[in-house]
Amino acid sequence: MKDYYILRRRDFLKSTPLVLGGLGALAQSAAANSPSVNHPITVQDVIDRVLADAGVDPIEDTIDTIKVGDPANPVNGIVTTFMATSAVIQKAIEQKADFIITHEPTFYSHRDTTDWLENDHVYQHKRALLEDHGITVWRYHDHIHKIKPDPIFTGLFARLGWLNMIDAADPRVCHIPETTLHALTLHCKQSLGMKAMNYVGAPDLSCKVVGILPGAWGGMKQIPFLSEGNIDVLICGEVAEWETNEYVRDSQHTDKPLGLIVTGHQCSEEDGMASLAEWLTTQLPGIPVDHVPAGDPFTHI
Image (cartoon, rainbow, N blue to C red):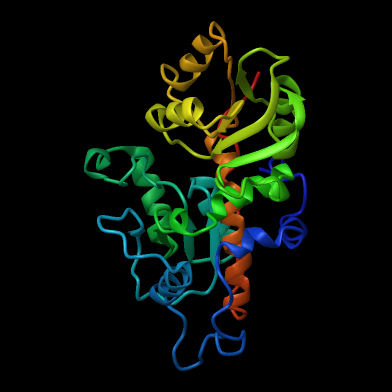
């Protein structure tokens, strides 16, 4: 996980205030938000504060629910992360944190359904690790993506050094100094601290207008963005390998060849969740809050 961070998280976030700007202005003073001796901060208190600050309309059938634990549990420490992996959970235990806020699923499916895993030893081990240490896990995905600007996007823009290059009309687009697809991929690899990164397209393709879709949007959203957005290259978190990458490969045989850079899902969204930890620190001065990156799941040879 150390490979992921090139800069110290706190120094990085202090240098990029727009990452925090997507989370809104502070609603109350730090003193007013301090945990009360008579009424300790609970999981539900933290969730309510996060959702209130998001300032978005309620989302029906949301996946932003508690996966393990009780909303009435008192909170003594918080960890934010892209994904509550077993390694992240272990780190939370070491830090005596009992509330994990994760962006992505904990139990290997979009809705964290577990009926199909009841007899699976990996699932049983992970759930026992959480329950035995009294850790609550809440997913924060749908609502954070509704904030304007989306902190997940701005976290990635900040890491790439492009906060002042965002298109005023389309916050998914950046206008960067002209470079080649190969050089742009190297910039992404180095900025995100990744050991490997994939791209599709001619290495010398001229890139000035970059579209960004962190995470996993799927080909039916990535491809129209490429075809209709007047962009030279798309940077995305991940692809299904019969969809967008094949569309871009076929585009090499047309009069408008395109480029695609696939960063990996985790590193495209981790910084947005780090910004949440920074904001929570200002809101809950009496409670330790830290961001623990999930890290690249792959070993590259």
